[in-house]
Length: 254
Image (cartoon, rainbow, N blue to C red; front, side, top):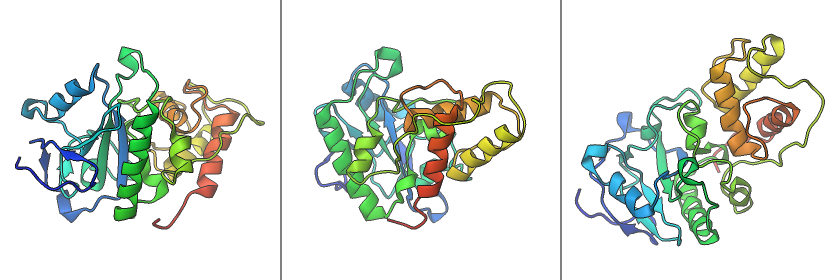
């Protein structure tokens, strides 16, 4: 790929050959955050620019706050894979992807450095303002692919991003009345939980059975919105937090 002008002024351009056209003339209305899951940021950069890997993102944010842009925002980067949100399955055509350098769960999962998060916030603010991306459509990779992914994970400071003006967030409920729902449970309460998760955007079909897919979605929800305990069990804290998010969810573009 030929060099291009960065969409975010603070980014240096490192062109990746792994991109295509956004299908059907789609415009980005989702922002998806990832961690790299590699031992080093340089390893991630090489992978994202390797034609054989067939993977890329629009941006890579290094631990020291440096930002590389790999794919122009107008083009379709290959970062989300098999995924869905609010019924959309071609997430790549509808999103901008940011990879955040972090070894991830397989390599110790360290905290995200403050300089890195400051850079992520600045980049996200610029993107959501330019593309008018709704707050509740700033998502984790695990939100759109709960069966496959867990990034950027429960250590990612979503609350800090929200306080800076990026993303949808409520203070997690500390508890409440109601039985915890878990694997092999069934009935009206499970059906209602699945309906609420689907209403927020998760790719889940209400069946009334708390199956593996439901546990995976609950786990993804907890990683993003109730990170104190990530166990796939829909306890009162998880369910009330979800209900608070539905009530406060923005319904118009920012």
